[in-house]
Amino acid sequence: MRGFLACFGSAVLGGLLVCVSGGGPAPAFLPRGESQEVAPRPAPSRPTDGDDVSLTPDEAVNVAVYQRVNRAVVNITTRSYREEGFFLFDGDSVEGNGSGFVVDKSGHIVTNFHVIEDARAVSVTLYNGETYTATFVGADPINDVAVIKVDADAKVLWPVDLGDATKLKVGRRVFAIGNPFGLERTLTTGVVSSLNRSLQLVRGRTIKSIIQTDAAINPGNSGGPLMDSRGDVIGMNVAIFSKSGQSSGVGFAIPANLIGRVVPQLLKHGRVIRPDLGITRVYQTGKGLMIAGLKRGGSAERAGLRGPRIVRLQRGPLVLQRMDRTAADLVVSVDGQPVRTFETLLEHVEKHKPGDRVVLEVIRAGRRIKVPVRLDDGEPDGRRS
Image (cartoon, rainbow, N blue to C red; front, top):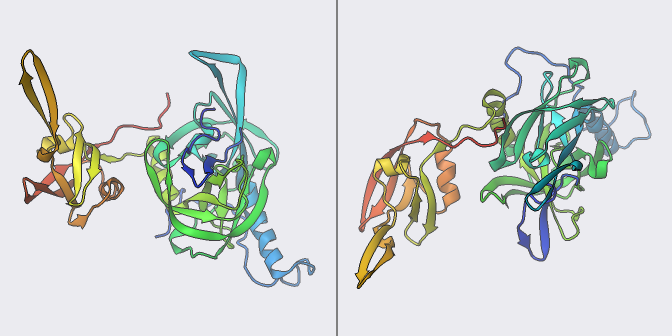
């Protein structure tokens, strides 16, 4: 798979940020009123008389979290074509592996998009050793989230509970379960090392609010859950910062609240329906975001927003073209909220849905004006035929 250990390509301080696939409260995934069988929630307190008295309170929590969640964690194996130049070879296919977790009794499983990207076949092994062929449901490549499905009996499916990552604090204890190096349902522990990290994707977008942890995360952990001491999933393991490609005490997880926003759309539409502003590129300046590119016929262009002007100059038999950036609008706010980076601009826009109207305040020829823009439906992403 091209996504294997290649999803993130940012080099920082001599290390490498790599994916770890081998080779308010978030909304529930089940409709209201639908019940599901779950394991008892662990209590972070001293063991009761019925517990193994040899366990310390901390050990009892470790055991309880693992017993609660481990049956929800699956091993994902993918097969993809071997590529050589312009040719694809089916006979000598490439195998990769990663992790995922069950989110409902219907057999839906959440994992990282890079785990299944480019795969021609995906199989899932449950806690009981049974292996199933998985079908693709939907994906959000921008946030590296995907949903697949297995046709398994509800009795062998143990959905997780999604927690609230917005309430995390640095120093809180966390637990990771995954399949590092193919070793199924391995538990590692650590703490929240930092919050609100930004993770740069090769697709040019940055995931905000990433959780940093020192829990050991290795190749094969991608897509596995990160839990708190209650056994609630507060993140999905996605990458490590490492010089060797193995755990170095710096791991990253996508927050559960982002997963909770994305997954319902993937279940319903197969993709995330995002509003499209129609601005394709900006340059940061001291006065605002200079519009450097507009989608032809898009929302921003229809609203009258302006990018650079092409000036044609006649020089004898030659016609020269020059870009006049002074003609471009400078975006300073969206709906009254200041924007200083393209990411903050997108964050404000993505709080809306297609068809909504936003008001951009721009500087044009030295004057501030407000331009209402009706948002389009964004380009489909992540859907497979």
